[in-house]
Image (tube, rainbow, N blue to C red; front, top):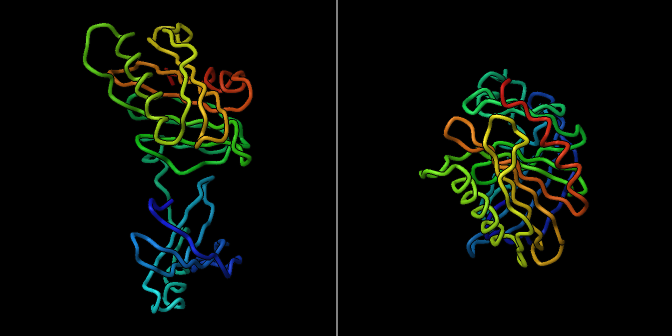
Length: 238
């Protein structure tokens, strides 16, 4: 979660009660960031199908008790503006809703657990074992005349971005698709190795709506049928 972080030790892991009574997983760490040795305390709690992680750190001669008091003060019993969440994109109990442009809804397996967002993602989730998983991102469509060429640029850009976490990237197919009715779309399928270890198949459907692109990306070590079943639940005219 912290780029350039080297964890030396994790200890004292147990369940605690936050200030509002919420149960959270508590643990302490000794770590190094940028050549500096630190101590840290972290709590992780779940609310509205979202994992909330809160931590604080200090120099090695700091007080672990002070850090513990800070993280324990976290309160999750606040009112949530679900309308604001849904504007950007909100996932709960197998349903994803976005009301901002481009608005859409999508259904996903209830066993999927939310994961930390990356880059311009608005949704990222998968089964606890790792595969399959999926993400949704929103981006602007590049300027140009032919919509399929513009979507192709985005598709190939996505394939190139996998180089930051993988290798042996091979595009096995890329074509315009018509399954989203009046909405132009493009699909790319990629086979690659995640961190040089796990071979994954990734399928990305890029859908044009209101001068933006919706990127539905799925990753699996199995066949892509399950991902296709998720993608086809999207309602682009909610």
